Image (cartoon, rainbow, N blue to C red; front, side, top):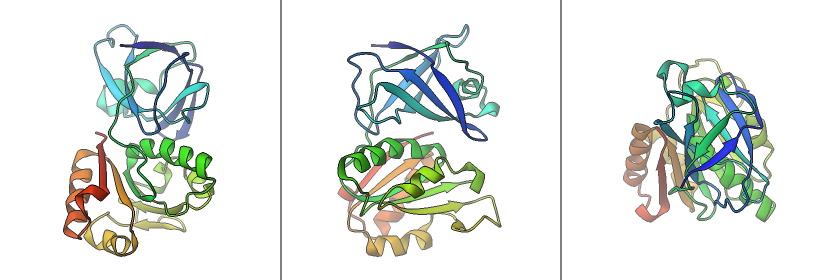
Length: 226
């Protein structure tokens, strides 16, 4: 079943990522980390949808998304940056495999961080701290890090920033790929779950690497976000 929403606001988060807010329809329930399929109502776009994660806490009166726009893809994401308040979209019922199964290491690539926004916000609101949680977030450049200030301000959350296409990032940011050498020290100390979300190839590679490093299958939770 689809639900029609009217855009209340759209604001930039990074150079190519936007925060979208909609009034929340009565009775629309979801769990932190879940996504919906979003369809534009613009002429010529009603047959194409894309999955996006709901990022606002489930208790709020708004539905919010943090969406990375890809102008060169010529798809729905390219249209996101051109939306205006008052425009309508349609969304599916919520779905998703990523859910909070306890503290652990959250590994994200690019827009794959969005399920973790909702999960970590909800856990922080519920527990008052994110002790035992670590976020490893990979991007092309430091400027691409989504909601960096918010994550760094979350009580108890350890943040690890890494970039792949920038040789001289600022303080606290590493230039490195999330590979075996990168992950091994974290696997040695992590006793909780490993949550992975990002492009298919990245998620596959990290899952295989974690398994090779001895992480049990039931400790790995993944969601593809191509």
